[in-house]
Length: 440
Image 1 (cartoon, rainbow, N blue to C red):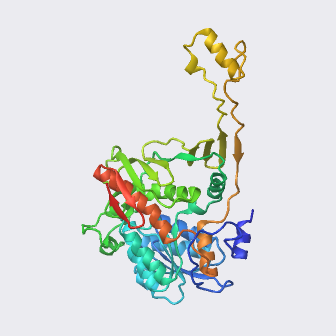
Image 2 (image 1 turned 180 degrees about the vertical axis):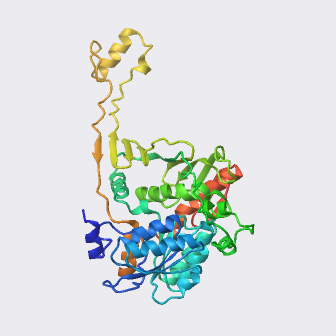
Image 3 (image 1 turned 135 degrees about the vertical axis):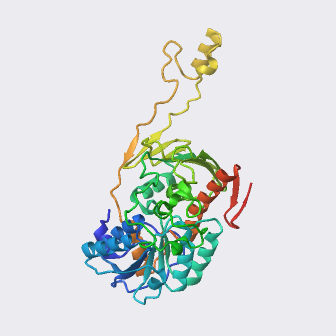
């Protein structure tokens, strides 16, 4: 296994994993140069991305943009401490795009700003790393895909599970038919605390004086300043797709990677807002069943008032079951079907049943071995590989294809959007990914 430091030194994604389709983007810098980065949105997730990119020696921090003074102060403190850089800050993302020393931007704003900033960044000639979900609604996906193709720049969506080493091992096992034909996959995310339900702490200095509220609203409906909306924006439809776009998208991106599936053809959702009565409008419990053209179902559930420990993924196949339990993968084989029936012959006369067992090679006086023995379970553990952000830096430096391009970003975000449409409209939603049209 190639270590992370060797990955950065080699500058090669292909040294670790095979690349996902898509044409290579033009390299922004020479292979020996550092990538000048501008960060747009340095709140909770944006600050985590500062941490990720700071670990890559090929990154060069230039400027950070945000609409809250406190986040900008934290970014300056972080960059000084971790990257030994006096990073510049601004409240205008346009200032980032106008700089000639910026090769790529990292976008971690609320969802309703993703499309606008991504399109503007591509138009400005910047490579783009955009935090998932790629879009706020279904129609935005094709616009970003078209802009990506026109620009020739690398667009990478930030669903880190897609490139994780464990994901790649599950992908390998499913491709090898380790459990036969898969017909059902279950994935879930359970959390039972205020932080997990996005009820984040609000800084004491939050006010219109420290936050550019009107600019933050953007295309969202105008309303008086509300700190809860600014810091807990995932709780409202105006800025977010709730649990589906925040948490399902992680699962969907990983699902598409391990199965090779492109996108679901339908979704049916049930759920509700049953626990967090704090003014939010998105559900806190959501269960969706997706149907895929490869003839399998994917069940996904998020519950924000229960802390059950659920495996990352359970795949049910014709020849066994694969359980991805965070740090290990277990493959359970199916017992051989010898076609010897016990229940089906339960009411047969004694002589007839004994004759039946003899015909199957079973001694009626000692009827053991009616069924085959379950194969011994197989366990796999995989060392951690590079960060998702490392692949982006490598693509920008080397001109290699994105490991999560806009088409893949649309497939995952779009699936989450149709899950929400099913929930909000109370009907099954069918989706034609090629045309982006829905029916139901």
